[in-house]
Amino acid sequence: MNLKELYAYKEYLTYLEGFITENRKLGFERVLENRTNHFCIAVEDVFQLHNTSAVMRSCEVFGIQNLHVIEERFGKDIDKEIAMGAEKWVDIHRYQSNLSCVNTLREKGYQIVATTPHAEASFLEDFDITKPSAIFFGTEKLGLSNEIMNEADTFIKIPMVGFTESLNISVSAAIIIQDITNRLRNSSIDWKLSEAQLLEKKIDWARKSIKDIDFITERFFQQS
Image (tube, rainbow, N blue to C red; front, side, top):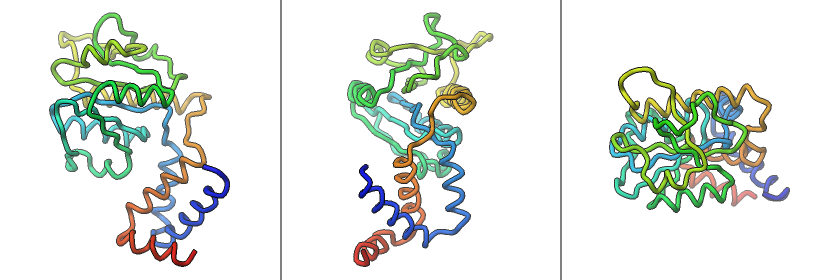
């Protein structure tokens, strides 16, 4: 985004903010202060719809802005009762194949991190948070596919001391997301959204908060 575009977007945001309350505007600023693209989450063919929605909710609560959903076998829509409105505030990216998701995320500079309970994985507490990372979660019964496992740059697991080998995906995701985002916010890593990214999200969220947004936007351009 060049300076001319940045100025134009700021003008548009100022115009949109005239249609939302001051409390909502301050709420956007407060939440975006803790949003990050340093990490993103990817879920592969999760059969139970409510689990994908719960993962999205964890992303929103703990400040992960982008969720990537692979739908190679199981197409799905968001369960809004479980997501509790998180679908408005988290960016969802959908893919028809594992490799298209992996390749897209690699091109964006993310290392591919596979979650697995197996012995070759590093414990969550030892995970290096300095690298931008895409954390992948697999199906409830089988875990991640061999395709994703073979593409992974590194592996992490949650320490467990019981008889059960694994946790439900939504529980695993919540534990891992909370841990890595908490460590990130307490680090010296440059993890926050850029000025352009903040502006983009403020506009996006304002648009989602305004009724008749198409009419209002058309009026803005007529006045410009």
